[in-house]
Amino acid sequence: MALFQEKSFHDRINAGAEARKAQLEKSRAAAEALKATAAERMAERMKIAQEREARQAAREAVKRAEAERLEAERRAEAERLEAERLAAEEAKRRADEEYEAAKKWLAEEEKRKIIKLLADQKAARDARYAARKQRRR
Image (cartoon, rainbow, N blue to C red; front, side, top):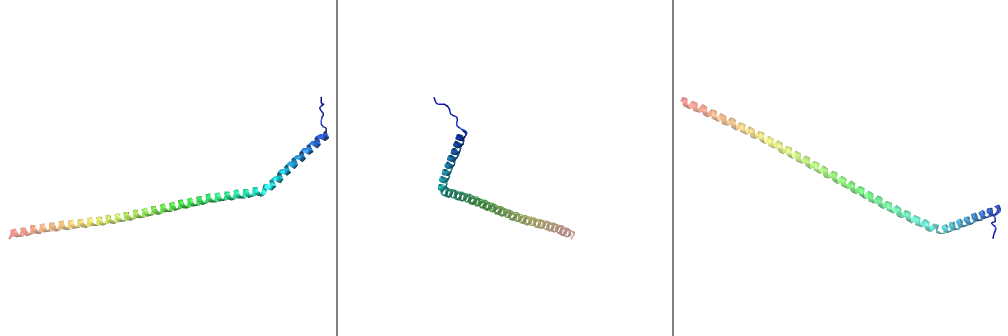
């Protein structure tokens, strides 16, 4: 049966140093492997960044186009409303002119009726006067 032997302080220090050394070598090897592929990774990152910028530019172009389309629609709607307003004003002006013309015609017609009535009354009066004169003779 083997006896358990405790490691000495010196053995533990050496074991720790060797472990640190092994870890350092492992890190250096990993760094060397990363250095070998660094240019490749950088190229991939650049490609991804360019693609991201292209997508962003495309999104901005779509947004700009949509904004321009909405602005054109808004302008077209404003022009349509302005045309409708002008047409309504023109229709109102024509209706007012027709109303004034009808009002003037009615006033003139009323004047003609009154003149005709007065002329008829005068003719009737003259006829009565002439008949009275005729009877006296």
